[in-house]
Length: 248
Image (cartoon, rainbow, N blue to C red; front, side, top):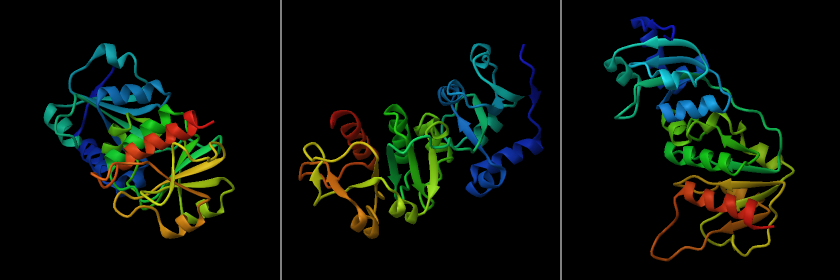
């Protein structure tokens, strides 16, 4: 049997505060929901600080790396979760980014505000083995529980920097801006695929004008005139794979 203790009311209250960005930043911890996401994080070598469970799944627990194990009732577990149908497992993980080891292909996210989009971009970046993500400070918090779940926990394993715009403008890499129109067709344009920064803009406002003026290349994805635009995460996925694996 795994060594575990009951979750105290005081500790429960402290953990619940981690639903707030301010408290996550203060404590350097965040909540992760769902056995699939938690297992992926553990498989990627990220140590789980705490596990809060309702029913003990011995087979799953045997595969996880964690420091502390707490048991609680379903009501408290549901109150720690932000999803409507949480599973019987929540983890506490340190809010630490993996450091950049290369600048070959960076994704710069300019004011991405939707948690689902941000999480999906992280997941694609991990799958495509991108060098890292540079995220503006006015983007959605990557340690938001919805972002973590949408990313399948890859926010902890994809190298990330929180940056200001000047970081991008000063960088030596070529800047490729993803635009909705007035750009080169991404499938036919002659653009580099190494030592680049692909800029994906805000869902509502696109890319900052100063960045557009500074960009080395502007590219777009041709779409039907029956639709205004593509989802930011979908557009990012198409461009990432086109630039990295198809354009040689």
